[in-house]
Length: 231
Image (cartoon, rainbow, N blue to C red; front, side, top):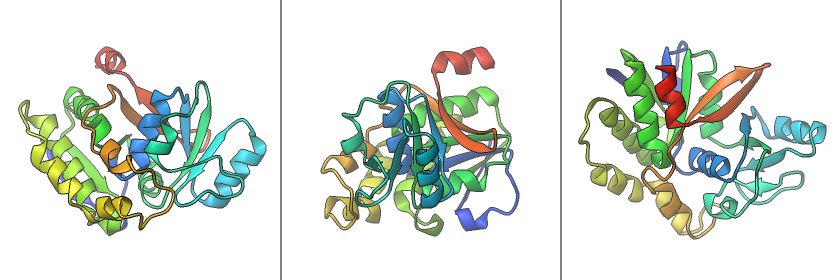
């Protein structure tokens, strides 16, 4: 498998298979939302679009980066989200990097969104598809976020090697600037457990696939049995 690691700005044309990585915190939050029962996540282009979705669909749950804001139900924090009851709900998510990265590759043949919490499930999809080329989109810090790069490199390793050790990759993520900013309260809308939750390896057994549905970029969980049946 030929793995490329690029920032959002480096995307020139739609890749065949894209893995969009945002460890701290967009796709950790997305995985937690699914674990709490969310049916789907609509990835929003802007805060205004997210509020417009919410206005048209009051039962949808809107969340964003940063502190609480009028019109939004939640913030982009796994620690704050893990107690929410989202059974059967549609979540609208707008973040600084993760959702931007996913929307940037919306025309790819397959888009997977990932963090450490779904690393093995994501690697399993890549293994079963036997993709010749995979583009990993490192969303944070203009493609330089160490936690996202470490996670992307780990998933790439797991897609081709059965015995890849996660310890060094997790250490790099734990030592990243994003982890320090979350731990020190530099970023707003943070729970004290956020960093630890973002570094929980393979917490969830599903991968997350994003695809266009009626012009919306929609993220859904794909359980292991569905992966196996499809391949």
